Length: 412
Image: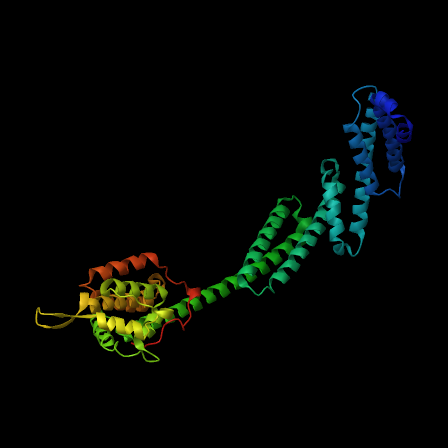
């Protein structure tokens, strides 16, 4: 028919197309009926794939059937489809019987899974023997799936990252649980007993692996918490050893300012702390000096050079007649620098510590250190306010963010 259509002139095709399409359908339907009937009559050579192809072709033809003139052909297709389904069921049952009779049937899980999937569509048409074969196939298919899950468990056990391994095991356990639920829903647990036992054993092994992961994570967390305690103690101890209290720091600042008429030493103590406390502190210190003393600082790399020191030295004092004649620090610059250093030391050493993670003795030590610094600023409300704002702005370090080398060495 296709050859005939291709041989016609375009005008003839256009004129006769409404008649040619139904005729073409009818010719194809007759050919499919012939092939399907032949496949159904064969006893030994017919495969389930051949029958399935015939059913697919019949279904397509039934969907495309003309609305009139071919009722008998449509009825023949519907009847042939029923015969194909019966033949397909017989072929599948015969294949199932042959597979289940093999001594090495446990090695045919993939074939059993495919057969079970196909037979499941015809479960309502199965007799007692057929349903028993279906359950036996279900058992083999389940065992094949469980074997695959066992392989997955073996692979997961070798994953070095415990968190990735744990996530994989949780997903695997969920698949196993679903498998067991489906097996227990069946009404023939005796036939499915081998699969159920395999699944239960695998679930137990998976649970043990998960327990190992949990234990490793708990040990890892405990180690991090212990490490965090040690880091926190070092931070606190360094703060306390350096005596970062306002009166002590003020005395130190006054002594440092008195040396600013001299070039800085190679390991100048004042510059060391400027560098240690970081860029934000250096910026704050620079703004304070420029505002209170009215000079411009260069501060290359965040430290004071000889010119900066001389500028501060020459501007830091003023002569006053009251309360007694003499030289005094201009705008109480020594007090303001001391307040800035005192609160920055608390920001640097104490604020990074998350007190909620500390064990009681360490927490009490933290409180003592904090109170020492805080009370030393009792007459400096502005510094207390600035310190309070820092507690809002800064985030404490987490256990996985610290190392015992984080605490700064002494030097003041």
